[in-house]
Each structure stands twice: as structure tokens, then as C-alpha cells.
Amino acid sequence: MTSQKTNFESTWKKHQFLNSTEKNHEVQTYEYVQKIKSEVLPIGRFGEHNIFEILKYIDEIVDHSDPDNKKPQIIHALQTGEACKKFYPDKDWFHLLGFIHDLGKVIAHPKMYNFPQWAVVGDTFPVGCAFNNQCVFPEYFQSNPDYFNEKYNTKFGIYEENIGFDNLSFSWGHDEYLYQVLKNNKNKLPEEALYVIRYHSFYPWHQSGAYSYLASKKDEEYLKYLKDFQVCDLYSKKEEVFNVDDYLPYYLGLIEKYFPSPILAW
Image (cartoon, rainbow, N blue to C red; front, side):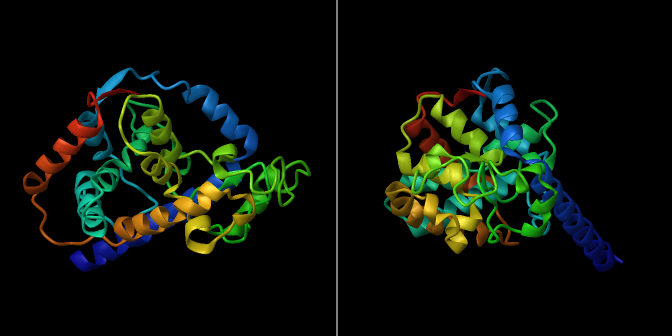
């Protein structure tokens, strides 16, 4: 009975993921992204919260884009951080990156923006130019108005060759939100860390090389960190027993090192 229940839950979550992806591809137009940005930015509309308060919030969120992961978000945060530590032992900012990279999912919480899953998680992609076939389920884009809009459906759209990802608009999600939070709060994280946070769900680029015609030299240079981080992020989700108290103090120390205050505007 337990096995049947587990299989049912997994199938149902995958069904939710497919529905969420379809809605994401249908609704995330260039105009939609600008509208969301106008509602969320500037950062600070939800006051100030401690980083660990935000971690508790996202522990209450079920990520439909990760249907087989049943671990609390704090476990995933610590497992990713530990994987990052093994990958780059001498770069503690990379360890902290692993620990905080999903904090942006808090925009799905009822006490925050209560955004639907399709506007929070899943792969991200540029808007304002043609959708690339390397995106997950590209056929769903045929329901997106921009797919037929001559202003946006060409290779470069409203952009120029090698303009750089920082100059594009992307589908809205937790990556961009956390990037904006960090950008608008004092911290000592290097530019590489902010870059990985902003684009860690941009799978068409770091897995398949899609949109390379829009990439800048900076994007090419930082691609290595994105690829390395994805190894730590995707393959750290293990079923092993994980005692939070054994690992948490290290990351508390990193937060103290890189943030003048753990209380940030959100």
C-alpha cells in the first residue's frame, strides 16, 4: 500500500509539474514580465526579514518542478552547500551560494506574494525574442502570444547580437527575485555568486548552449560556475540521514561573514 501511495504521489506531482510548465510557457510574455517587475520592484515591499525566517517560509512550500524530492528546503539547502564545499573547498562564497540559492521561492508563500508555481519555479528563458527549441517542452510556447508577435518572434527580437544576458528580460521566477534582493541589500558576495543565483534555472543555456548568440564575454566566462553549480544542486538530493544541527553552524558563520546583517529587505 505504501509503495502504491508513493507512486501515486509521484505521478500526481509530475502531472502538476507538466501543467505548471504549460501555464508558464503560455503566460510568460514580455509584457507579463514587465508587469510583474513593476509589482515586485523596488525590493522592500514586504519589509525586512531574517534569512532564517525566509528559510522557514520556504520549508512550507512544495516545489512542483522537483516532483521526486520530498526533503524540506533546509535539507536541500544544506546538501547543496556541502556539495559546493567539496567542489570548491577554497571558495566559501560558493558554499554559501549553495545554501541560499533557492530563497527566492519565498514569493510563493501566502505571507509574501503567493505567486503560483508557474511564476516561481521551473526553467527560465529570455522573453522579447524567439523561444529556443532547447527549452523544456518548447511546443507549449505555441500558446504564448509572443510566439506570433513579429516584434518578439525573431532570433534577436528586441535585442542585439551578444548583448549579454544581464541586458535581457527573462521569464519571472525565484532566480530573478533573489538576485534583486541581494543586489538591493548590503552583502560581500562576489559578482560570480550573484550571477549563478540569477541564472541557475536558465537550463537551455548552461545545459545545451542555447541563446549563445545573445551571450556576452561575461556570460561565457561565468558559464563554468553555472555548470559546476548545477552538478552540486541537482546531484546533492540524497535520501541519507542528514542532521541539520551538524552542518548549520558553518553556514551561520558564512552569513555573518558575507552579510553585515542577516536581516534583509524583501
